[in-house]
Image (cartoon, rainbow, N blue to C red; front, top):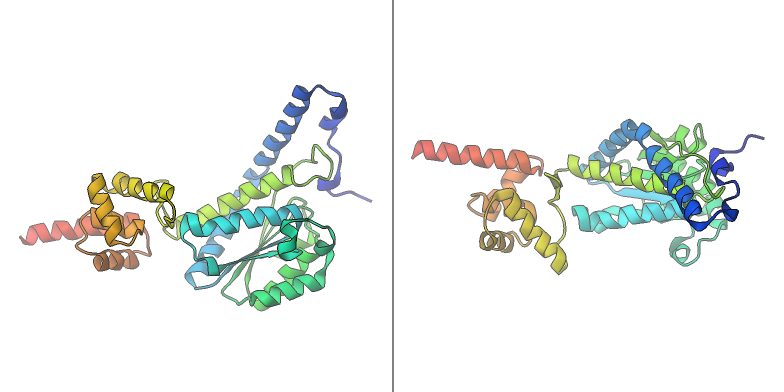
Length: 307
């Protein structure tokens, strides 16, 4: 029987246990490089998937992450960081991890085979047709993941699958199938290594493209962050200074008026007369800062002509 790529032995690891530690480290590193390279062919699918995610957020839907084992940890890392980085509300992100909270202390294998558990978790998440679900499985055949995706599709949610083997049930069922052709693991079957790294890179790209589409990124700045510690408060101030060209005192005043929200603060520092005006300009431009700044500049130009 043909073994999945993720279960095959990688020949570069022959005798790795007999090598000196520097040579072994170099082989392990080469495995990570190859895994990262595997994401490149999936960029068109990641672009398509990011559009689905942005659409769901705009429609008031939720982003659902679903996976088991190491893939679940990759999903967890991406989902938990979206609120602080891009201001996506916490209650709009749901993470279905096979085994639940207990899996954060002990990743047992049994839950990943439990289709009934998947059905219960999807039911509890209360999915709707406005939601988008991202399901990950290195093998592409994990019963928990495949069942969850199947139920989500029956509800009408947009489905995105990420797997490291081709032509698998998970990829074949999804609206967007993201195939990451990672080579066999340096430690055979240890998909927390290459497959997991590729999945994390794919998630990073996909969720960041979503944030760009939603207007939460401007000139490489995370302009929709939630500044809830001193580091992020300083970052918010630096962003307002960098984008608007104002000084520190002006940036602080603008952030105080905007209650710490960076995008309206940038507009205030750039000449918007008050917070309401700044918010209205952002709303009329789909929360995107670049066209909002252009609109503000044009309106100021019109006022000068009238004067």
